[in-house]
Length: 174
Ligand SMILES: Cc1cc2nc3c(=O)[nH]c(=O)nc-3n(C[C@H](O)[C@H](O)[C@H](O)COP(=O)(O)O)c2cc1C
Image 1 (cartoon, rainbow, N blue to C red):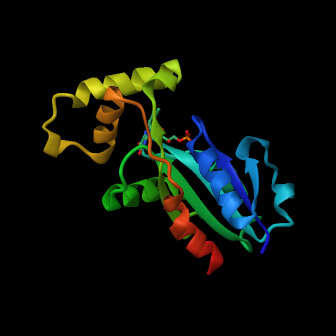
Image 2: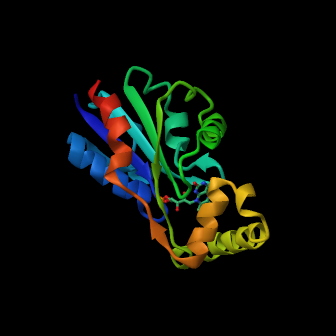
Protein backbone atom coordinates (compact mmCIF):
# COMPACT_ATOMS: atom_id res chain seq x y z
CA UNK A 1 0.00 0.00 0.00
CA UNK A 2 1.43 3.38 -1.00
CA UNK A 3 -0.31 6.42 0.44
CA UNK A 4 -0.11 10.17 0.62
CA UNK A 5 -1.66 12.72 2.96
CA UNK A 6 -2.66 16.06 1.44
CA UNK A 7 -3.45 18.74 3.97
CA UNK A 8 -4.63 22.33 4.17
CA UNK A 9 -3.86 23.99 7.49
CA UNK A 10 -4.22 27.62 8.47
CA UNK A 11 -2.91 27.49 12.03
CA UNK A 12 -1.13 24.13 12.15
CA UNK A 13 -3.55 21.48 13.46
CA UNK A 14 -4.27 19.66 10.19
CA UNK A 15 -0.53 19.79 9.44
CA UNK A 16 0.28 18.27 12.83
CA UNK A 17 -2.17 15.41 12.19
CA UNK A 18 -0.70 14.88 8.71
CA UNK A 19 2.74 14.40 10.27
CA UNK A 20 1.43 12.06 12.99
CA UNK A 21 -0.47 10.03 10.41
CA UNK A 22 2.63 9.85 8.26
CA UNK A 23 4.66 8.61 11.25
CA UNK A 24 2.05 5.90 11.88
CA UNK A 25 1.58 4.76 8.27
CA UNK A 26 4.73 5.72 6.38
CA UNK A 27 2.60 7.74 3.96
CA UNK A 28 4.09 10.77 2.25
CA UNK A 29 2.82 14.26 3.14
CA UNK A 30 1.98 17.06 0.71
CA UNK A 31 0.53 20.51 1.29
CA UNK A 32 -2.62 20.87 -0.88
CA UNK A 33 -1.53 24.17 -2.39
CA UNK A 34 1.69 22.58 -3.62
CA UNK A 35 0.11 19.32 -4.82
CA UNK A 36 -0.67 18.46 -8.44
CA UNK A 37 -2.88 15.61 -9.61
CA UNK A 38 -0.03 14.10 -11.66
CA UNK A 39 1.95 13.56 -8.44
CA UNK A 40 -0.74 11.20 -7.14
CA UNK A 41 -0.52 8.61 -9.91
CA UNK A 42 1.83 6.34 -7.93
CA UNK A 43 -0.38 6.18 -4.84
CA UNK A 44 -3.27 3.82 -4.15
CA UNK A 45 -4.45 5.61 -0.99
CA UNK A 46 -4.97 9.37 -0.71
CA UNK A 47 -5.96 11.05 2.57
CA UNK A 48 -7.16 14.66 2.66
CA UNK A 49 -7.04 16.77 5.82
CA UNK A 50 -8.19 20.28 6.66
CA UNK A 51 -9.39 22.50 9.46
CA UNK A 52 -13.07 23.24 10.12
CA UNK A 53 -14.09 26.82 9.39
CA UNK A 54 -17.64 28.09 9.89
CA UNK A 55 -19.08 24.59 9.60
CA UNK A 56 -17.11 23.57 6.50
CA UNK A 57 -14.01 21.49 5.95
CA UNK A 58 -11.23 23.57 4.40
CA UNK A 59 -9.16 22.41 1.47
CA UNK A 60 -11.52 20.04 -0.31
CA UNK A 61 -11.34 22.03 -3.57
CA UNK A 62 -8.45 19.95 -4.88
CA UNK A 63 -10.35 16.73 -4.16
CA UNK A 64 -13.58 18.01 -5.74
CA UNK A 65 -11.74 19.19 -8.83
CA UNK A 66 -9.96 15.88 -9.28
CA UNK A 67 -12.53 13.39 -8.01
CA UNK A 68 -12.85 11.78 -11.44
CA UNK A 69 -9.13 11.10 -11.67
CA UNK A 70 -9.09 9.74 -8.11
CA UNK A 71 -12.08 7.39 -8.39
CA UNK A 72 -9.99 4.19 -8.40
CA UNK A 73 -8.00 5.18 -5.32
CA UNK A 74 -8.80 4.55 -1.69
CA UNK A 75 -9.80 7.94 -0.28
CA UNK A 76 -10.44 9.29 3.21
CA UNK A 77 -10.82 12.73 4.77
CA UNK A 78 -9.99 14.01 8.23
CA UNK A 79 -10.95 17.37 9.58
CA UNK A 80 -9.94 19.16 12.75
CA UNK A 81 -12.10 21.56 14.65
CA UNK A 82 -11.84 23.32 17.97
CA UNK A 83 -15.16 21.93 19.19
CA UNK A 84 -15.77 18.68 21.04
CA UNK A 85 -17.02 15.90 18.78
CA UNK A 86 -20.80 16.11 18.44
CA UNK A 87 -22.63 13.51 16.34
CA UNK A 88 -25.30 15.89 15.03
CA UNK A 89 -22.90 18.73 14.18
CA UNK A 90 -20.54 16.27 12.51
CA UNK A 91 -23.41 15.00 10.32
CA UNK A 92 -24.21 18.60 9.37
CA UNK A 93 -20.54 19.31 8.68
CA UNK A 94 -20.31 16.27 6.37
CA UNK A 95 -23.58 17.12 4.60
CA UNK A 96 -22.29 20.67 4.03
CA UNK A 97 -18.76 19.76 2.93
CA UNK A 98 -18.98 16.39 1.20
CA UNK A 99 -20.73 17.32 -2.02
CA UNK A 100 -20.01 16.97 -5.72
CA UNK A 101 -19.02 13.31 -5.62
CA UNK A 102 -17.43 13.31 -2.14
CA UNK A 103 -20.55 12.04 -0.36
CA UNK A 104 -19.34 8.46 0.20
CA UNK A 105 -15.77 9.20 1.24
CA UNK A 106 -15.11 8.14 4.85
CA UNK A 107 -14.58 11.23 7.01
CA UNK A 108 -12.98 11.38 10.47
CA UNK A 109 -13.00 14.09 13.12
CA UNK A 110 -9.94 15.15 15.12
CA UNK A 111 -9.89 17.86 17.71
CA UNK A 112 -7.73 20.90 16.97
CA UNK A 113 -6.70 24.09 18.71
CA UNK A 114 -7.88 27.63 19.35
CA UNK A 115 -5.59 30.52 20.17
CA UNK A 116 -7.28 33.86 19.58
CA UNK A 117 -3.97 35.74 19.72
CA UNK A 118 -2.48 33.74 16.84
CA UNK A 119 -5.43 34.35 14.49
CA UNK A 120 -5.31 36.66 11.51
CA UNK A 121 -6.94 40.04 12.07
CA UNK A 122 -10.05 38.98 10.09
CA UNK A 123 -10.46 35.66 11.90
CA UNK A 124 -9.89 37.28 15.31
CA UNK A 125 -12.52 39.91 14.55
CA UNK A 126 -15.09 37.24 13.58
CA UNK A 127 -14.31 35.20 16.69
CA UNK A 128 -14.55 38.24 18.98
CA UNK A 129 -17.95 39.10 17.50
CA UNK A 130 -19.13 35.52 17.99
CA UNK A 131 -17.83 35.49 21.57
CA UNK A 132 -19.72 38.70 22.28
CA UNK A 133 -22.90 37.24 20.80
CA UNK A 134 -22.75 33.99 22.77
CA UNK A 135 -21.50 35.40 26.08
CA UNK A 136 -25.05 36.11 27.19
CA UNK A 137 -26.32 32.61 26.45
CA UNK A 138 -27.12 30.20 29.27
CA UNK A 139 -24.47 27.44 29.50
CA UNK A 140 -26.98 24.71 28.60
CA UNK A 141 -27.90 26.56 25.39
CA UNK A 142 -24.34 26.69 24.07
CA UNK A 143 -23.28 24.56 21.11
CA UNK A 144 -19.98 22.69 21.34
CA UNK A 145 -18.39 25.34 19.09
CA UNK A 146 -19.68 28.18 21.25
CA UNK A 147 -18.27 26.41 24.33
CA UNK A 148 -14.91 26.12 22.56
CA UNK A 149 -14.97 29.82 21.70
CA UNK A 150 -15.67 30.82 25.29
CA UNK A 151 -12.94 28.47 26.49
CA UNK A 152 -10.48 30.07 24.06
CA UNK A 153 -11.50 33.52 25.24
CA UNK A 154 -10.18 32.64 28.71
CA UNK A 155 -7.18 30.61 27.63
CA UNK A 156 -5.75 29.30 24.34
CA UNK A 157 -5.93 25.53 24.02
CA UNK A 158 -4.57 22.77 21.84
CA UNK A 159 -6.51 19.52 22.07
CA UNK A 160 -4.79 17.79 19.16
CA UNK A 161 -4.02 14.23 20.17
CA UNK A 162 -2.80 11.16 18.28
CA UNK A 163 -5.72 9.17 19.75
CA UNK A 164 -8.08 10.93 17.32
CA UNK A 165 -6.27 9.26 14.43
CA UNK A 166 -6.95 5.72 15.63
CA UNK A 167 -10.29 5.23 13.75
CA UNK A 168 -8.70 6.46 10.51
CA UNK A 169 -5.62 4.27 10.97
CA UNK A 170 -8.04 1.35 11.53
CA UNK A 171 -9.75 2.23 8.25
CA UNK A 172 -6.41 2.49 6.40
CA UNK A 173 -5.24 -0.88 7.68
CA UNK A 174 -8.52 -2.69 6.97
C1 LIG B 1 -12.97 31.98 11.76
C2 LIG B 1 -12.91 30.61 12.38
C3 LIG B 1 -14.00 29.73 12.26
C4 LIG B 1 -13.96 28.47 12.87
N1 LIG B 1 -15.04 27.65 12.75
C5 LIG B 1 -15.02 26.44 13.38
C6 LIG B 1 -16.16 25.58 13.31
O1 LIG B 1 -17.16 25.84 12.65
N2 LIG B 1 -16.10 24.41 14.01
C7 LIG B 1 -14.99 24.05 14.75
O2 LIG B 1 -15.00 22.99 15.40
N3 LIG B 1 -13.89 24.84 14.82
C8 LIG B 1 -13.89 26.02 14.14
N4 LIG B 1 -12.77 26.83 14.18
C9 LIG B 1 -11.55 26.36 14.87
C10 LIG B 1 -10.58 25.64 13.89
O3 LIG B 1 -11.22 24.58 13.24
C11 LIG B 1 -9.39 25.10 14.70
O4 LIG B 1 -8.62 26.19 15.13
C12 LIG B 1 -8.53 24.11 13.92
O5 LIG B 1 -7.56 23.58 14.80
C13 LIG B 1 -7.90 24.76 12.72
O6 LIG B 1 -7.15 23.84 11.96
P1 LIG B 1 -5.91 24.35 11.05
O7 LIG B 1 -5.01 25.11 11.97
O8 LIG B 1 -5.26 23.09 10.56
O9 LIG B 1 -6.49 25.18 9.94
C14 LIG B 1 -12.80 28.08 13.58
C15 LIG B 1 -11.70 28.94 13.68
C16 LIG B 1 -11.74 30.19 13.09
C17 LIG B 1 -10.54 31.09 13.21
